[in-house]
Length: 308
Length: 222
Image (cartoon, rainbow over all chains, first blue to last red; front, side, top):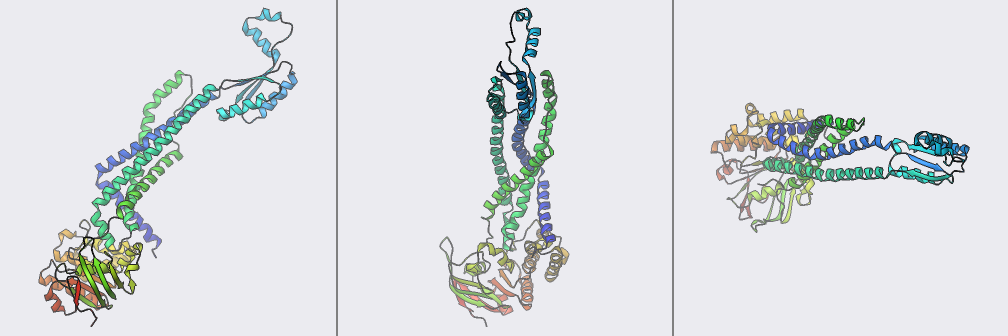
């Protein structure tokens, strides 16, 4: 029975051995890590692009407004009750009731038809409820649901919302997210292949050592262990370099993006990776490295048996 | 104990290496496996070390039929054997100490025990002063002694050696053979394949003579 200390000491030894191996071949290590980092940087860039686009368009979606024109025979009291009902909806942000009299006064003030309006016998305008959805409920499906609800009021004449562009924007961002997912899957496969190949070459170079180790009773798990650590280190270092690429890229683009945002009067701020996302990138890179090494090692180590 | 029962071994190239070989070696016995090159001596050792499996017949080692041993059990089986080869099979980029420690490293022995046992093995083969040397810095005889130290460090019950003195002059070969004799004295079963008949005669242990894959003499323990 192996003691926990011996078990961890063996793993530490394998880890240090793998680190030493990487340091003994600095150029080869750097090239492999650079290729892995590029394969990880591309999907990470796309992810950040989608994330920033979502953040940038968040303030735009806040400008979406639904206007409910009530029927002209609806009383002001009933209009107030309907406005309160609208406020109670969880999708609702700011709800404003514009009475028919307020509407007419406003129209008189700004339209320039003041004198013509004097000729009217009554007020032809309806009470109007203006509703702005909450920013976190401004997606097309929530707005459509809200529109259906408001349209079901018997007192509602017209419910007007111009959200076509929001749907298009959301579809575009959805497409970008899909592109990110496809790229991430393809490039993850690429990372597996790169690391699997690096491990295959390493196994070939250490064939004699593997044969001797198996000859004296080394199990497949024992022989595989240093290669798994090597793959894990390749993945981790590749992900760390990818994170550095992202930071450098963000730093280089930020002044131009902020200038562009200012030109559109937006308070947009570039959003980078959170600590959790950085952890995900490093952890994902390490896992890919381990998996690539496992595949490479399982395939090639089983073919090596001691020969005499 | 090692027992071969009607063992046949045919290699994929069609060569019949062993034909109906049966013998028994008792625990703690010292046996020479003799015959000219290509006679089948190495095939016997390969079957004992499970580097090969018999085409027919059974090989029993310490009462266990090696033919029924699954692949995953082979590493643990080999850890109970000590194996020495003519070309030493050392890791040339590792110091003597690390080479000898390898069988203990793979068996998850604690570092303290590894240190004790490796130093004891180094003392037994007289290489304590060279523990940090690389194998290439040693003479052929010293390299062979490193190979022997590695084979015995895990305290195997069976020690097998394939032409361990093949590259050595007679004096060095005698020294190496005396080392094997010392291990037999402490209860280890020793099987040595050799074609050096002078050494076989000098040490006078039982001889299993093989010719063209057939056992010609010495099948039973004396």
